[in-house]
Structure formats: C-alpha cells, structure tokens
Image (tube, rainbow, N blue to C red; front, side, top):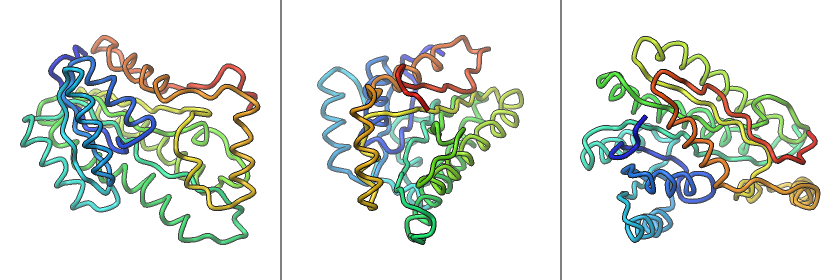
Length: 248
C-alpha cells in the first residue's frame, strides 16, 4: 500500500503503541484520526504531528460505547472522506488470581479488549467494503498464544482477538480486498502495568524490566509499517514480536 494520503483510525492513541504508531503513520503522509478517552493527550499529539508537517485530528472515543465509536468514525469520515487503515489498539491488562474474584476487572477487560475491538471493526468495515480495500490491525499479545498465571482473563481476551483476526481475514480478504494483521507483542514498555491493582503482580511485572530489554512502542509501530507497505497482494497475517532475550 502506498501510504501517502491514506486515512487511518488509531484507537488507544493517547499513549504507548497507539501514539507511536500514529506518529509513524503521519510521518509517512497518512492522515490520522487519533481516538481515545483522554482528549487532552490526543490534542497534544495532534500538535506534535502538525509541527512535523503531518495531518491528524483528535477524536474523543470510548470503544466500549458503540454510539461513541460510530460518532468518532463519522467525525473522521467528515474530516477526510474515507478510511483505509484501522488499528484496533485500545486495551487493558489488570492482573490477579482468579480466586480473588475481581469481576469488575474481568468485565472491563472483556468490554475494552474484545467488545471495543468489535465495535470499532463494525463501524469501519462498511466503508472498506464500499471502496473494496483497506487494512485492519488488531493488537493481540503473546498472551493470545500462551496462558500465564494471574493473567488468565487477559489471556482469554487476547486469544479472542487472535481468533477474531484470523476469522475476519478469511471472510473479508478475498471477498472485499481487505487485509487483516494480528500484532502479537511480547514485553513492551507501555502503560499496561499501570492497570494492575494487585500489588504482588505489579511488583512481579515491574521486576521483569531487570530481566530483559523491553521492546519500545516504536518497535511495534515499525512492524505495522512493514505490514502496511507490503505489496497489495501480500497479507502479513500475524506478527509475533519479542525482545531477543525474552525467555518465555
């Protein structure tokens, strides 16, 4: 895909992988819709992108709310006319043992990590079908391949993302000329650990930084550019990206 002039929607764009990817896309001439709940951070990112010669708009969006998602997509379409790239990146990663029964955290993970992704896909897909082209990226995880104690519900949501991504590719690839890529990062230096309310698991996860060199958000953004810039007949369906010294 020639990226110059393309239109992208990035959810979870206020920090981490989403923000890094938005900056990379804008640097390639993509007009970016930055979507998240923290509008102040998005506006700062818009300012940064425009200062570097790019183009972007801030879209306050809660992916859990279908009406909010549809309103955000409508805002992007009104601004730029279409949408070529969707990056479903919003996600949460609380950690706790199942027996602690933190059901509110379970529900929030399912709402954001799974339902939020479905809401964004449902709002964007009709536009891609109409133009018979597009590329959808979904952020899964190493937790979408393996299961880890304390992250059982999170792993379940990321396994769902991996499965949905493959099913979506099978259904819309040939029929609608839409590519689908599932990104599966290992340890990345982002804000995900901030969602961990369990003190023991928070300390355990922070301790991993002493065991390996975490990936940077830019590393994942670069893999997304790689998949986007592949020839149109090539669909990079999965990207499993780990630190070289990650032992699990």
